[in-house]
Image 1 (cartoon, rainbow, N blue to C red):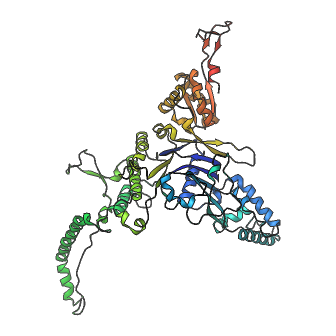
Image 2 (cartoon, one colour):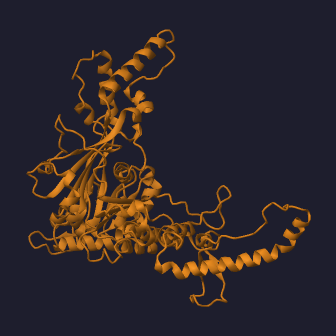
Image 3 (cartoon, one colour):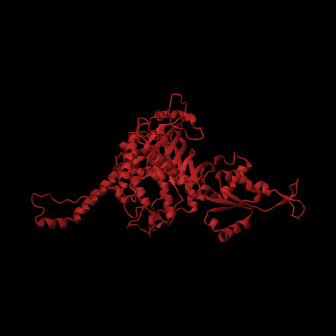
Amino acid sequence: MKIKLVDIQNYRKLKSCRVELSDSTTVFVGANNSGKTSAMNALMMFLKKQRDISTKDFTLSNWKYINEIGVNWIYMEYKENNLNLSEWRKYVPTLDVWIHVEKNEVHYVSHLIPSLDWTGDLLGVRLLFEPRDLEKLYFEYKSAYKAARKIGESKNTVKLWPQSMHDFLDRELHKHFTVNAYLLDPSKIGELYPQNLPDNSEPIEGDPFKGLFKIDIKNAQRGLTDSNYTEGGTNTKKLTVQLRKYFDKHLNPLDMPDITDLDALEAIESAREAFDLRLNESFRDAIKELEELNYPGFSDPKIIITSKVNPIDGLNHDSAVQFSVSGNNTNEEFPYLPETYNGLGYQNLISMVFSLIEYRDEWMRVGKAGKHSDYNSSFIEPLHIVMIEEPEAHLHPQAQQVFIKKAYQVLRNHPNLKDNNQFSTQLIISTHSSHIVHASDFTSLRYFRRIPAKSYTDVPTSEVVNLSDTFGDNTDTSKFAIRYLKSTHCDLFFADAAILVEGPAERMLIPHFIRNHFKELDRSYISVLEIGGSHAHRLRPLIEKLGLLTLIITDIDSVEKGTNKKVIPITGKDYITLNFESATL
């Protein structure tokens, strides 16, 4: 089971876009403010319910039409069945999830099969943020609006709430709106726009993906600190906290012990008894002195000192995690350094990889986690989805490449996962790093392309480009373009515009000209690519798909007509150049 694609509608600047997900790793790329974070947040909020949707998450241009609904309601007399839910569905945030299901997985999705005509493959579910009760919303909005207008008639300078439907929902959104799930028609997946729901559609009860997905999220803000900086008097021991959490969930011998824990429990009990004996010997004189004061009295209980040894407390200190700088872990005489004295980049790499291990082991019910009632009463979800925002934070380029190369392998490094198709893993990453793109498979890239506003009432939006088939299949052009991009210019995917130049001279001079003579361009992210004028056309498929504003600066290489033989340019010889023809986009 895998998520094949998702359609995101009316969410921030993603008014209507389709994102196809890779079977293993999908990497979201694009310039700043292109919609990568919006797509990640849409997945997190609809699938994980990490936070509530707000009015700020609606596509801004849609409020014009939602406010018009409110205006119509003010002057409309209520009659039975004259409120139409479908007019709201065109403007509210929506996520369509299309799942690829194998024949041996049908028992997982029996509640999602739309009809007896379904023959397998894809199943679709729409998650729709819509009004709970349209009649209640109608009456409460109309009542509040009229009351505000009545009170405000005497003081025209006062703007009372609500001024519009947008103003009303800023306060009352979650009182009146909720996420409902609906089944989609698989036969309509090929349509240009996401399908409309029939008027008689009934929502699915409960969470449609419960038991199907396990979703883990690693946000961009990871809260790492170094040894020289503390905020609020505390220092974040990220790896220590992670290790302690992992130990408590998967390894703690005191938690539902089995035969493998007996040696550890015996050692803990021996340590406790020895420590208790020492405590009572140490406090003997003090307790005897208290007894000479006739306290406790004859009938009062005696003072006995006993300890409690909890293995997790052994990880709850500043030096629980240390690093050996000698290169020899067995050298006990060589000093160790606590984790906060290591570089932030190394800390972050270890922290993220360990998070992936923790996500995987929790999914596979490793150790004690599989014994708890909240786990052992349910089966393991067939699909594990891991979303990571900007893994490049605090990582130097080499560490970024190590992470993207190994992340998916770590998530699959379990005996039940390596060669087992019963359980699937999909990793989704958003990034601004050309180094991560460089180390990624080109077919995994999803480029978020900015679309300018089409009118003064509209807002800029985005669409998603699947780059897996940009250059065709294994042709000389595709091989050249992919190798060239992978070796030099992955930053093209994050640029505002591109300039293709002939050679190193132009590569050095163009940035100088921009910096000193074109201040507007200097404030933009311009990618200058040294491609050679005669090869610029090989990047044409990519440039066109990215929709990237591009300038080509090339030499005028003279050739004879008919022979295409290169010659020294001479006035009046009627020579031509092939560069203009081949490089024009």
